[in-house]
Length: 56
Length: 177
Image 1: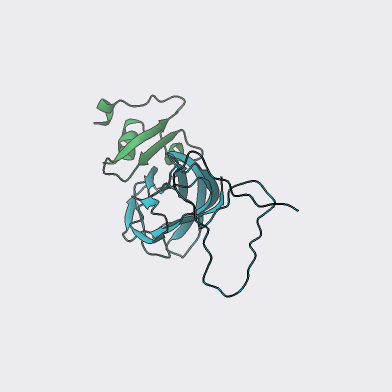
Image 2: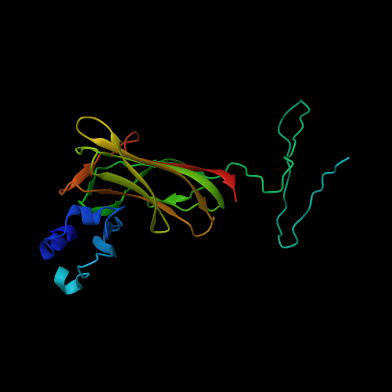
């Protein structure tokens, strides 16, 4: 399961629009360095940034 | 009459040599009536992807360019351009998503890890589409670096196509600092 899938599962109200690079409030990033996806930005107005435990 | 003065630098120890080419013709080199640093053969690079890469939906992913066409100053490494000469650079990048419509893709040039310029998708083939970005950027010649990222929002994974004509990243210095 990708980080995106985990976030959608945790917060079903999220849509891909929330992750739009220009207009979205959440940015997921992968530096292609073997460390996988991570949350580069979380500015969602109502949903709290999930903890590592929630994403585990 | 105006004059030409050659001035050394008290901090340096190297010797600057002005050399003539192998010619039998008298030539005149006219300097510009400006103050500044002349630029000679600034860095230029061009690289492309030689492997298909998978992009997770809604995730900006660094694009990998494994093969270099040229890298005149050895400033391109690990899909990152870090020029060692300060100046203004024209850079361009393109990615081809092999099975995606034009509605969902972005290509991003990041400078020092931060989104710098966006480019969106353009019409490609019936099966896929290109995303292209082109910009002029100042680089300090020491720590500044550029990388290319791509993002798509189809809801499922998407693959890029590899090849010299499809997924590439290139640039060159256009003037000094």
